[in-house]
Length: 231
Picture 1 (cartoon, one colour):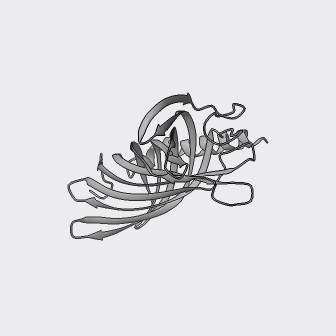
Picture 2 (cartoon, rainbow, N blue to C red; picture 1 turned 90 degrees about the vertical axis):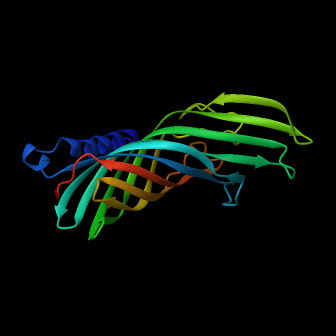
Picture 3 (cartoon, rainbow, N blue to C red; picture 1 turned 90 degrees about the horizontal axis):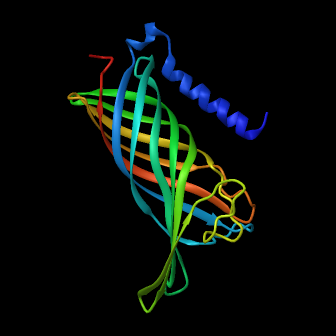
């Protein structure tokens, strides 16, 4: 089985969680979240040395989650998330050459989450893998002289066989990303939720082998539970 076929089978398996038997649906609860995330990409050359100086990119995200009870206090929490990841890159001692790389993903996280009852609701902590599919993206390159922008060039992000200009020599971005994440939060008794999360890509996004590129992201979310199985 090819790598892409394996990933597609995995995603279909994760999505099948949303179509569980009717007798379980009465116990399942759903939630909607919106949030802000800061992401950055780690760039390393073939020798393992840091190849770029990067700063976080700040963008919004939104997700739909399903909470499936397994045993008392323990839940399987799969979801579908729209998220933008990327980085701001600076080249040159005086920062005369900058790039902003953004890739928009449809992400499927699956966390194993433990919930602890407290007086104002429940505290939650969880961890698990994610699989993400790159929808599209863009790379903006700007050249400065004496602190002033002298030129701006925008490139669309290409995937797989397409060489991406302005990122790293010969870079071919992988459309698929795979990683792990941890999350913690509060489910208030009024059904509002507040959470934080961190994710780290474990897959090299550069198919060319000229560099190693991995995603990192940290964010905060505010949401609402559409139902609670313990009510």
